[in-house]
Structures are given as structure tokens and as C-alpha cells.
Amino acid sequence: MRMILPPLRERRAIDKALSRFFHTHKIADFRQAITRLCAFYQLKRPRFEWYAYIDWGKTAGKTYEDGSIHLMHPEYWKRGRKYNSERQWINMIYHEMGHYVFWVDAERKANAFAQRMVRGVNHQQ
Image 1: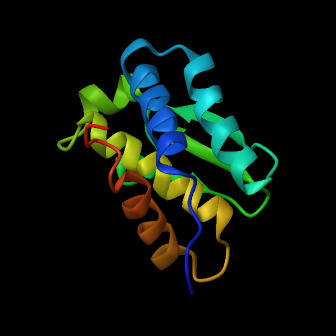
Image 2 (image 1 turned 180 degrees about the horizontal axis):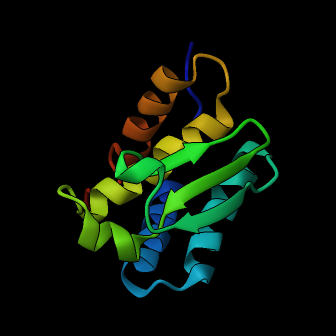
């Protein structure tokens, strides 16, 4: 099965907005990124809830069947984790959105989606 992704230009814009949110914590940047991603797949934007930690610190994000997504806020991600880089947080967002987009065989496809979303994003145009 071939996975359809947004064009590279759109993925770079999404990645840049997520990066801005990671540093500034302005929710408008996060909403812009998620809205662009959902618009490409013609999906309703999921409900997000922000937490300091999820599942006693074992989990960074969790997607539920009702379409809501619980995420660790970047503010807490930076100070409370061993692996606390911006890139890993953004990859976690892509992973959870992969769960939201692909419900069947969710874990494998979410991982593949996260890996393919960042392929080519950081290269110069």
C-alpha cells in the first residue's frame, strides 16, 4: 500500500509551525500546523488536551477512538524527559497524527507516517 503524504512544501510549512510552537508555545502555530495537515486529508481537526505527563511519564501522546488526542506540552517535554529534543517532540506529534489518520494496524502505520513526514523536510530547497 502506498502512503499519500502532503507535498514537500506543505510538510515544510507544517514542520516550521510545529517548531515555532515548540519554542514560543503560541497555540496559533500549533493549530496552523494541525489544520494544514487535516485539510490535506480532508479530516476534522481532532481535539487536543495538554498534559505535564501522561501515563506516569511513560507516554508522550495518546490517541483515543473518539478522535481526541492527549499530548505532553513542549514546556514539560523539555524539562522532564531524558530524550527531550525538539525533533523528537515533533516526531511524536506526527506519530499521534498518524494514529488519527490511519486507524487500521495503527502502530506500524503511525511509525511509518512519522518517518515519511520528515523525509526531505530539513534539506535546503
